[in-house]
Length: 191
Image (spheres, rainbow, N blue to C red):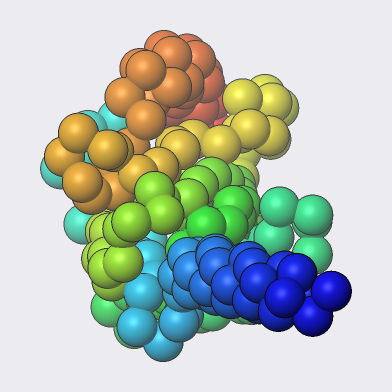
């Protein structure tokens, strides 16, 4: 009987070793998903300008003291930043999360940018992305419903291996924004 128990015990021990080895490998793979946010992140470098006219050339004045709110995917305020005297603010977002960024200042119409910071599991990098936003002064009777949704969406582009604007969304929303801006400049001239 002991002749049977020893080989059986040996077989069980080998099986347990293989199982623990597989569990260790799986844990090692899972730990790579938890990226260190101090090493791997998406840095947003923002510039907020004052839109004085329909062309980009009309955006020479920066907006200092604008508030930039970072909202989590579950609608919680993550952080707030203020633009400096040059209209700039920089901040880092952890990878593999989604955010809504609200840019606002008293007397101006707020804008929203959506950021999807999800990247493939094998991508471990620190990214920098520039976001230029133009705010314009509030005008009575202007329909700004189009600004209740994001003016831009930022996401990871697998082909280029970097963050970029969602071109299809930008094209779609730009058509709606043009109509609003046309109304804005008409109302502004009539004042």
